Image (cartoon, rainbow, N blue to C red; front, side, top):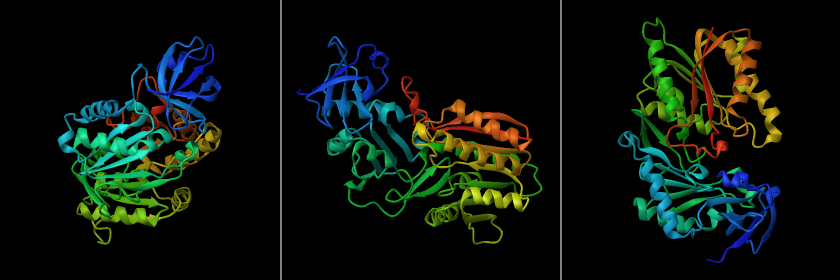
Length: 406
């Protein structure tokens, strides 16, 4: 196997020996015959083998480790790794889920590759040049190990620009998908737009948190004289509110800046027997900026039993952390002010550079400024089909808190 060679500077090999998969340019002494988008052998300053990875001189992360063994990364390797990842998802709840993540990039030891399944459709995301150049071979390997015959690409993510790549989307196998794909999650039905929806079409990582909110809403409903009120901000296709009260058991206000997202949400409510157009079904769909709508609620002195804050990524790099922190604090401060006594706040950050500890400190600061008190009921994260490699803490991008506020 002909591959390039990357030598690591003396004293900079410890993270690699500890199996962290990223190698930044500052750790590299020199590279020989390294071709962008191709494999390289990584050695220490004494030319001892460390790992084999993929190379891209245009990226700040110039090498990503594919294996720590002196082995070829060939078709057999891809079939073995894909089969292992898919097998690990075949847990006790497999029969109850028609959608799940099958490959979680570095966390499944396949850097740059994401594969999600929605019913009989698979969605592939090629985050790196190496994966992009091999996606047809990966599709063949996926078909061989899983029988997948309907595969769509959604590599239209900002991260590709850092690899020198343009956005890419389209059918890889099986032709064009339908406008919406029906899935079922925790007994709730959703329509997923894999061609134009957020991420690969749905926020699969929030599955367990949607179920937790539904259980919470059921407890609040017991003995309540009126329908509990839920404010669902950055609502997208209504996932949290539909799960918590898709049959009309709560009064939900769903706020998103995208009209198309709200149309998806309306369709999902109707799928579950709750029509926003019927007077008796207390569902509101509002196109608005979430920050502005929170201020409107304060001005109108509205109150809620539950508030969900699930904003998009506020910080794409460490340079944006302070700005992101101000945004998170503003949201959580106003949300705390709007909750009824003993109400619940479910709040999230999906910014990878915002650590769990920092996020909790930001929410703590918001709580103090609101003049309220709160208890941490639960620490929240991504569903089990989004595992985090122990040697790759950056993989824990989604972190959240469930707070009871007094």
